[in-house]
Image (cartoon, rainbow, N blue to C red; front, side, top):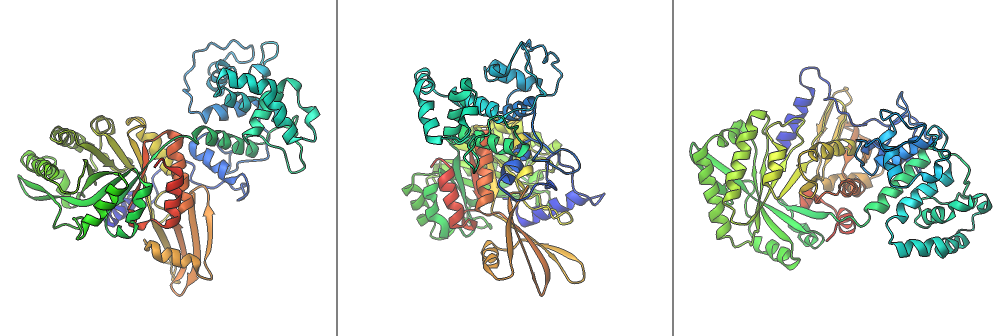
Length: 540
């Protein structure tokens, strides 16, 4: 998946011409006034999603208070509501459908979430929202998930038990009509008291409090969401073969496209870098032991325009597809499908050629599954995502290798991963989409003479480096990657590292969007801590 030479070519493309990085709409810079404290992760997760934004000049202003419309907009935006409007809301102070908050207020209104805040047919959108109003709003939203009998039981007696348990010191200040909803929010941990045991019901809500609460609401909503864990078994992965027990599917990277000459091509399992290893039987036995689905991954890059030429050579394609058919018909590995990983198509003119190839391959698979890997289309325009999504059973988007030397941009900052998901979801159904994760480390070395070089150190070396005296390691926002710094005789070092926390954040994104799953390139690179996250957060 995107070999080093491809990553290097991306970096060249990023800085070609102007010498500056490509423009991204995602928030990739940290807010100058957000410390790494209790609210930071929530703030940056919601910023990544586009649910919240800064207040100008690189600031977030987390202690500023929120209006009613601002909080409702954030909450409803986190639900990915349709921004169109039916204009059915007839509130006197919400008549303008072009108002920035209108579709979100309308959505909440239609769900009977905000009627308790409406007086004399007015919502008072610019009024500061109070903590008890937020608790009622979130409590109501959560209660709607219960059936009528469960709601009635809670409204009659359940909330009283929760109130006795909480014993807020200022409970008498809570509006009596709000208590059932408020205490349901408290029971689920959305709105809790402060360290002094007070709820502060009449206090205004701050922006950073809102970020934490909305992330909790998201987590509550997606906690039962299932995403599949998919591993790429390639290169040196046998040491992690037993981790298949935590996966739903495995794609075995044991073959390549062999395009020898005009009209001559075949599926190569024996003579390429990605070939069937000796002792392959052990890996297949482990996969069968844990009953994981098995696909054969077929790789090709576009070095020397090999792939572009192949996609215009119909006789070669016919020969290759026949080779695939014969291999899959008589394969001893038990593969149930093919995974096409054809990389490096840069020109939009190549889209129709690739689609035609996939259609022809699909017709010859005799009921076997077909998955297709695609890169982010900012750089590579040769992939018609809509057509690919219609043909394939599964599409894996390689949301990584954004690495850029001059700007210190690492492989997979969470905001850019999110931006890629949002782009691809415009064309590919979420139940077919898999978020590709690549276990990488990107290292910038500033030498004593001031020159800077970029390296990709082995995972084992990074783990060893972190444990050494003199290394400083912090989990960094908004990238959601481990940031490691140290000095040695070669100069000053900065490493961005994909660790278990960053993998967890990416799985969180997959759950938020309801994707089919996440894939791990490649299995041998992942640590025991990484696999523990996969075990916990996927649906094996």
